[in-house]
Amino acid sequence: MSTSFYNPECLFCRIVRGEIPATEVYRNEHVMAFRDITPVASQHVLIIPIRHIASLSDLQSEDLDIAGHILLAARKVAEITGVLDSGYRLVFNNGQDALQSVFHIHGHLIGGRKMGWPPFPGDAIIHG
Ligand code: AMP
Image (cartoon, rainbow, N blue to C red; front, side, top):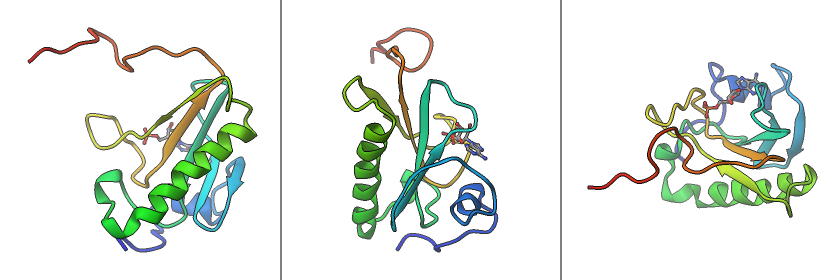
């Protein structure tokens, strides 16, 4: 197991425990999904492990099950929010360059609007 189950300093651990309110979309024994407080699309849901793991970079081989549960929950959330067929994006911001701001793994499920690619301004292709 990569880290402790509950980190009292962690915003998302506190949401899991109901200490901070959130609009829950889905939950099972492994993961919780709730609406992002600052949505960038009509459907913007965060999918997190119940257990505190700070970032994708902290995942260990024994976390294989939780990685799978997050992806399966994303599929479930896509169904619940009505974007399973229209399409959606699952984004994990990891670390400084990706602007991760909450250090408890979370996938952003975003859907209900057309999106662009790449997900940053500027040239699409970097050579060399
Ligand atoms: P990231 O920048 O990838 O770490 O994403 C963190 C996300 O958490 C942002 O999209 C925030 O809008 C979202 N967020 C922060 N606080 C809350 C909260 N209390 N409830 C729901 N979403 C939140």
